[in-house]
Image (cartoon, rainbow, N blue to C red; front, side, top):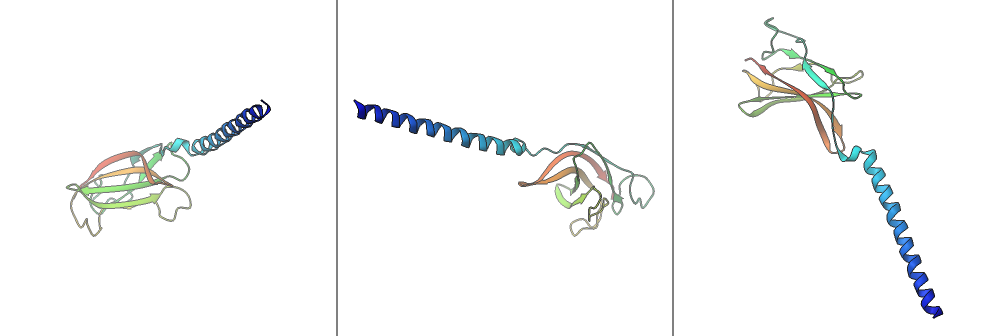
Length: 148
């Protein structure tokens, strides 16, 4: 009878230790995911096309060869902007610029003059982006047409 009680007590102690170990591991994993925002990569804020930094023909509209910049609001610290432009469904321009003090990139995009975009019109979208451990994550955006 005594051996049976010792065996039962030992099994209960092992079960209790296993339960405690699972709880500790669960708390550590849960804390790690909570610190990462639950694994979501969201980027907030709004973006609009600002008056052109350089407007070759003075019409106030984006044209091939002009220089564009953007106004941001409601963004996190050190926001980036990505500009993607397409001609006929083909990506012809992609650039990212830091929109914060100390950025080495500046905040002005050249519309055109890439190997894939030598002339003509294109449709562009500017995104607020941030870099995460999973790559670039996109948030708010604005789209516009660039005349040729």
